[in-house]
Image (tube, rainbow, N blue to C red; front, side, top):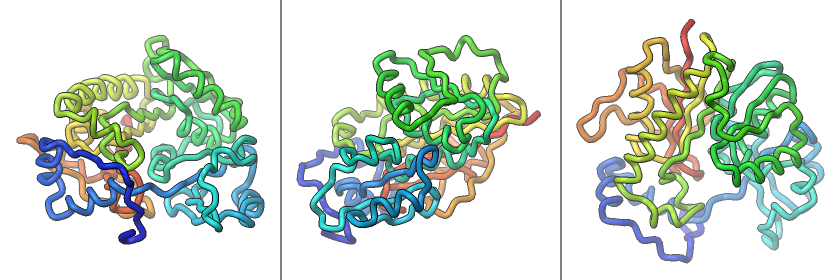
Amino acid sequence: MVDGLTPIPQTITFKPAFEERYRTLLGSRYEEFIRYSSSYIRKCIRVNTLKRGVEALKERLEKSWSLTPVPWCPEGRWIEHKAEERYDIGNIPEHQLGYFYVQEAASMIPPVVLCPRPGERVLDLCAAPGSKTSQLAQYMRNEGVLVANDIQGARLKPLGLNLQRCGVTNTIVTLNANRRFAPGSFDRVLVDAPCSGTGTIRRSLKTMMMWSPGLVRRMAAEQRRLLQLGFDLLKPGGTLVYSTCTLEPEEDEGVVTWLLEKNPEARLEPIELDIKRSPANREWDGKTYHKDIGNVLRIYPQDNDTEGFFIARIQKMP
């Protein structure tokens, strides 16, 4: 164990093209990135305040479990069994009752940044399996309308089950229904886009088997389509959050720059959170990114001992 990290026993093969790319991207921080990406991630939960308050759940669990606050999410807690006898937190009664959602700490950031309010019309464009959707619903206190959309019918089953378990009642689950909405239908939109997932290596080792420069290019094209769609469905004066769990500049700063250049009414807003962050990429592979790209939030696994994540907050000017 180094720096409190527990190495994953499986051998992770990092492709030469990946190593070359990330050594260029991270410089002297590359080895630290690999060390964190090759170590187990901390277990984390988000208290579901639709059913239980944070303190009430803490009192219920603290006999057997140690809970440590996640600085950027008031409902987030890293969780560890006091006797180190149990790791299956998804099997305890409180989870089955919907009192909490097992969710990685960095994954909680996009709904916090979007900050939906009760009574608003909110769209989660890529919703399954429902971690961020249920988080949005609890911030809305089950008031207003939350549309949870996905493009694969098989993914709607876990989405629906998770929302039901969490006591979510203000949500409409839709299958690829984005074309049925009129432009400007929503006060807030979350586009948590499918991506190459290079921030999730420590949670999903198959990421390295699937990764390739071609995959990054294909993902970036789909992300541009989804981001423009989400922006079109946003009301003037509304807020959109674009997020990925990849660290690829083409899928992150590159996609955001594309939207800003194509839509002069889009403004990239700064994100203020109690979190360690890394600088945004100002340029990559011969492409210079938007002058305001420093307003995005980019975190590597070693920044906060979490997944890697990228978040951008965009406002549509009236």
